[in-house]
Image (tube, rainbow, N blue to C red; front, side):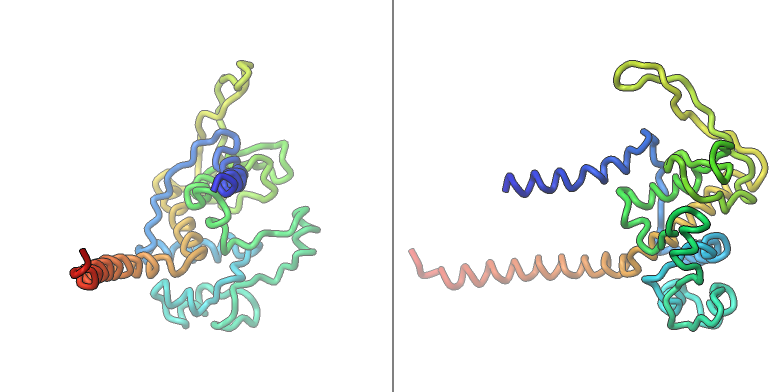
Length: 247
């Protein structure tokens, strides 16, 4: 048992590091997977702003249509941008890994499981989407407060406007003075409320992609729990019946 606990503890260390990377507080995404309107908007934003580089290769168009309350014709007309793609196909892009490495220095990650691969995945992604800021030292002129030295451009820049990171003086564990992120200053683009909703919709959609069965699993769990309660009661009564004559 002690060995198991030790292994589990060491296995969680990378996750803890991800959650506290840079000491940045993760904002709460407040994802609601039962909100089909949010899921539909998130799908629209993903296909228009992210799909040029990022695939969802573990998901299919027709399953997405069913779960998001869309018809297959609506998906074909509005959410299918790959040449020759069919409604039953996986959601893949035409860019190859070699092309990604050539243009961006690394293979572009698939995002089907992005919220499953991070500790507090939905909150991490929500904060990441809101965390791009100007940094002229970076190749694309932007950095990210959650993912330092991010290797991608800010694809939402037209909606975000110009965002600058403001730092304040703080202290590290050794007591030395360091610069600590304080807040963002944003100008142009949509309002703060609109951009928060956009980031939440995208996060909701990608959270759904990570586990399309999540709502069904939760609903099924209630019935499983009720079954166990009834089964336990019957098992107890049966035990009493078998042992009633034993003194």
